[in-house]
Image (cartoon, rainbow, N blue to C red; front, side):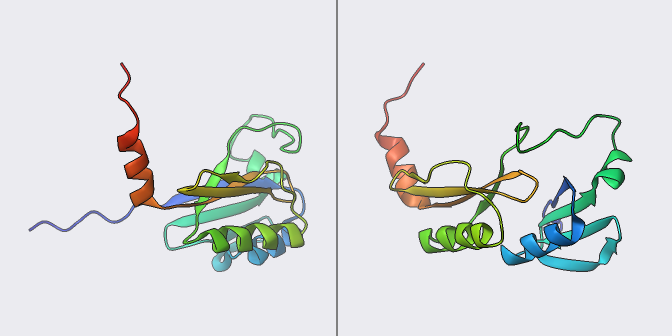
Length: 148
């Protein structure tokens, strides 16, 4: 039997204005520093074995692309999402983000089988934090009529 492929990993690269403040923010919401990938212009933060966020100063980020870095407090290019194990964990993560200086840019979403909140980090990057009861979600989808 062939070996299963290694799980894919994601590395989200985020431009930040204040690297030490951003490190503290991401630690507050549960990410852990990876000391092997850090210097005075970058810090890898791990949410899990497969989800990583690389915080980069604007100067360092600019070395990867000639495009202008938008002000994420004014524009949105992506909405990043993290899953949580329960509704309480969603609330806990969102409250930690708010206590660490983040904002809540969008209202809570409660669809019964799915619950979510969002937070924006210190630079305005929006994170969606969500819990879903997959069995209930699948049952709800089966109740929907098929569309052409």
